Image (cartoon, rainbow, N blue to C red):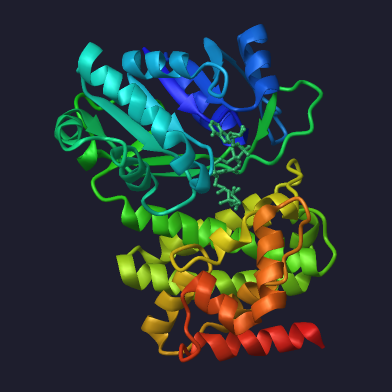
Length: 383
Ligand SMILES: NC(=O)c1ccc[n+]([C@@H]2O[C@H](COP(=O)([O-])OP(=O)(O)OC[C@H]3O[C@@H](n4cnc5c(N)ncnc54)[C@H](O)[C@@H]3O)[C@@H](O)[C@H]2O)c1
Ligand SMILES: O=P(O)(O)OC[C@@H](O)[C@@H](O)[C@H](O)[C@H](O)CO
């Protein structure tokens, strides 16, 4: 069986690639990073090490790589022959890979018109829907109709903390033991792939929102407040009592919104929250606040981990959530000279001020009751 996976980064190698190997796939990694692709082709295997006391190692074999900038024809051919296509490139990159994916699917319609599922494994609601929309923009009406019958774009939620790697071995990845991969079965085409570790569900929205608004909303607390308080890693930030207190408050606010919106069991959700706090405290993982805070414009977006749970919380309780407001204020302060979104955000704030940025980036106009609460938190930060 053949898998084509876009993005040979942390989650690509450390999570998706590992599960595909354990399920009997040969995985072709497609990436623009020449050194990682060359290393994959050179070694044809890599190690995934568990970040716990066991330090258990899985050797992932049966892998190869294609540099999509150099060998786009090989990517098109691989998509023609694939049994599954997955991505872990980051939400903003889905639009960039979509033309090549469309070319591969077009060739497949002619040369090998068999069903295929394409699963975007990104931290966002509707990742595969977005990939589909971008791919279909390259199709004619007739091609879209053929594609509707052949290709599934099931949405997915992926959860495993994989920090940036500092190993001497270019390909080795250290990952936390915990993982969850949930895929929306109802929008798949053809046979459902049997991949070890996937949980299939009929409706993904409750699962992706529970994941994003618990794991990722929570993660934003030690990242953004941690940076403001001078911490370099999530682990260091998690030792700070004031951060722990805000994290508990944030998970209570987003948790209430998730429980009431999707009717998750309250005690199960409490256990889920506690497990996540323990994961952030994993002493075997060193995860930079800069990685977790990356892309602040995306993270301050109206449907992402900060604004959407804050709006849901407000709808349910009638009041603006004060802890989420603190994290939103801290995110508006996020600085990283190597992160284009952080630079753009700070430029926008300098030019237009916070209110305008909340309107433009987060779709919150000044009449929204959340805005004065965020502005008050910003005032406190400036004192
Ligand atoms: N790392 C985690 O803990 C984690 C966990 C769950 C979900 N995710 C999600 O997985 C996705 C990837 O995150 P990551 O941490 O692995 O990031 P990463 O930066 O480690 O990996 C992304 C990879 O995509 C590659 N890439 C960029 N542009 C490309 C293009 N045009 N074509 C092909 N490849 C391209 C990069 O070179 C890189 O190797 C994100 O959506 C992230 O939110 C990450
Ligand atoms: O990947 P991002 O930038 O959306 O979010 C940063 C982290 O919160 C994220 O990568 C988590 O480590 C991951 O989502 C855990 O499953």
